[in-house]
Amino acid sequence: MSLLRILAFLALLSCGSAFAQTTVLGLGAHEFSVARQTGSGFQLFEKGFGSRCGVDALGGEAPQTFSIVSSFENGFGDSVCEHRLFQGKVLQNGWRMRAFQAFKRCEQLEGAVWVPIAEFDGCPEISVMPPTLGQSSLSTIVSVRVKGSGALIRKARRAVITYRYEIEGPQDTSPWVAAQ
Image (cartoon, rainbow, N blue to C red):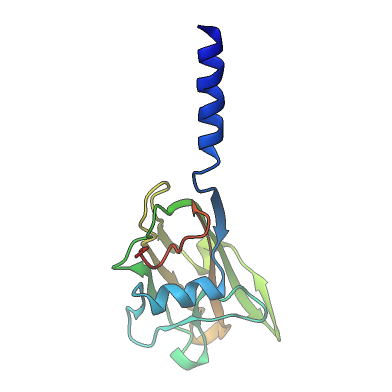
């Protein structure tokens, strides 16, 4: 009887190698581009008059960086923006959300240098609705208000949110396009 158990165990071990290995993928510029091309929606909304919102790489930042600015262009008034990522489509082929982080910082322009300021002073409202870990949806919604310094102080302010997504799924399959 124990020989049968040993043989069954060995058979299970040899079958295990036939299953696809899982891999972890950190999403960078290439993956964001492929997600856009395969139907994931990325939208940016300016929620108030004169708001200045952008999605760009600020001086070496990761390409998935969301910036909200209050400056001369909007009279140093408040900027209110919303960023929606990975809308309308889910990961394919068994891929799932493994980890998510939103790194937030609030800054004020002093001369030619952006310096950190207290979040409650310059960015009193930063709301991140993250994707659910373990699910196939990466849907993320971020709302931010940057409090302008006003026309008397006249200092540009900005909030910068950098996203880090990590997904996990079967090696040698696409998380974006379903297998045929």
